[in-house]
Amino acid sequence: MRHCYVLRVFTRGDEGGNLLGVVTDVTGLPERVMQEIATDNGFSETVFIDWHDAVMPSVRIFTPAMELPFAGHPLVGAAWVLCSIGPDTVHTMRCAVGEIPFRVEDGLVWVDTPMVRAVRRAPEAEAIAVAARLPEALEAWWVEMPLPYLVMDLGSPVAVAAAAPDLEALTAADAGMCMLIADAGDHVVARFFAPRAGVPEDPATGSAAAALAAVRRHHGTLQGSLTIHQGDALGCPSTIHVTWDDQVVRLGGTVCRDRVMVLEK
Image (cartoon, rainbow, N blue to C red; front, side, top):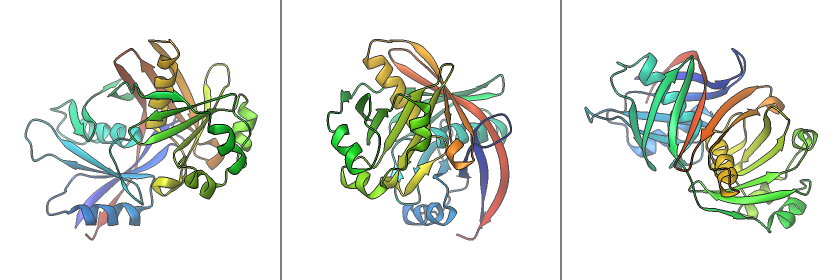
């Protein structure tokens, strides 16, 4: 038996956030069983922390359907565990895309991720929108996260809130990781659909926030900041803070401990 900490990551105040499972004991745990645990948990992601290396812990991230090389809310949750529950003696962890520095400042947990440069316009978005029953986007981009994310600016928070995409059509069009956004003045409204990863809709998606920062950099904003509101359509209000420069995207948010589960595996 081993413990799984259940957190709510990127909460808005004490409310909402995206549920995350964090397993800190991976002794004798093969990849197959990690995937089984993530599937059984049913959260958008479950993260497994391996600290056999005395210098730097490494993490592996699983959705209910697959392993991901990178995802923001599991990294923020893992950072919270390492700072708040763990010995708080390291401030860098390793995932499949490289080393991730992390810290806690003024109640926000921050992780630093590499700036993604593979951004291109998505002329296919018009046909994808028709097939998936989405409004036509003002602009759309592909961002390699390294999985391809389709970012679609619908122009209106109302259009984002009303969207009800055909998830099978998104997957068939290789747009099974799809972010819808609109500027709401002091923040960006976002929704993220990830049927490719077995997640119909995600309440808070750090990797998608990093993708949006990459789009802004691609258009010449070499440094900046954003506040993203997500999860309202699911009753899980979430807030993601993002800052970036030419090299690094920083993802920050609040984390609440929800409960601890005992796993039989």
